[in-house]
Length: 329
Ligand SMILES: C[S@@+](CC[C@H](N)C(=O)[O-])C[C@H]1O[C@@H](n2cnc3c(N)ncnc32)[C@H](O)[C@@H]1O
Image 1 (cartoon, rainbow, N blue to C red):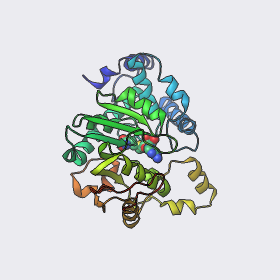
Image 2: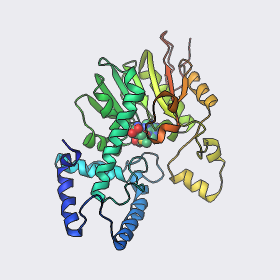
Image 3: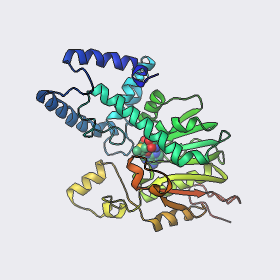
Image 4: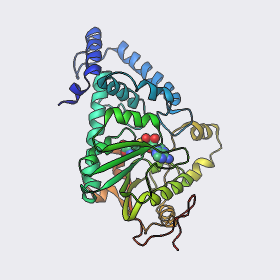
């Protein structure tokens, strides 16, 4: 079924708006007045982005009203609303010269399709070879669930977790699946999954947003939930061009720097050595760190220039010290 049909209510609402405004097809050129009002709208959306994100929080779409608003209405209404919320995110939907002239509705549908296709390519190129139908896998930082949905066809169960209640609610509306459970990571960073119950963890576009302290505690949780011998595959930004390290951000005392640290989306670049040391100090076997460009043909995605870090939990059971790093005894 074409995506447009799946968004029945959204489709009808915007079709009638298009009729009112005379906005007919993908190739129609908006008038100058309309372009101006679109750019005003875009600026307005930027302004509401901060409260949506929970002002200064890294938990995008966390505000409670997002969850409440998605609790009501028909399935197609919830999907349409979730799509609109996800489009406010700096992560997922963006205007480019290629889609700048699409109507609002066309833009949502084309970005939904682009995200679906992008996560399918990541699944096929970087994850599929490590997956099998017996596995229970954890998608760490699943966001609106595009990757969880792609992976769910290949495994027994996907536990898709995130710190943002709103992102999870959008995922439930947009990317539900019979073998996908969307679960909330609690305020202490605990994943609601029993010890040693997961066969593989993957995480894309998440580690780059967390500080070194948070990354260490995430590794502790990964270690706890993984079965001995199980694998972690995570995408990381290593020495990414134009990206600063956490230390550079922390030592920028300019007003702009402090405001961006407090309210902006954190994006950190790490060095290979720091990554290696952090992963091994958490009790995992030494990681393999490879440029994504060397692992597959171009994904035509933001992550083409980044790295994949793969490591395993030792088969020999180590003792896990709750609240701290797991130490080999
Ligand atoms: C760019 S999105 C990536 C979504 C998804 N992994 C993908 O590739 O499409 C980053 C997600 O990480 C989540 N996140 C941020 N900090 C996190 C943390 N400490 N633990 C778990 N998830 C986190 C955010 O809520 C957001 O949904």
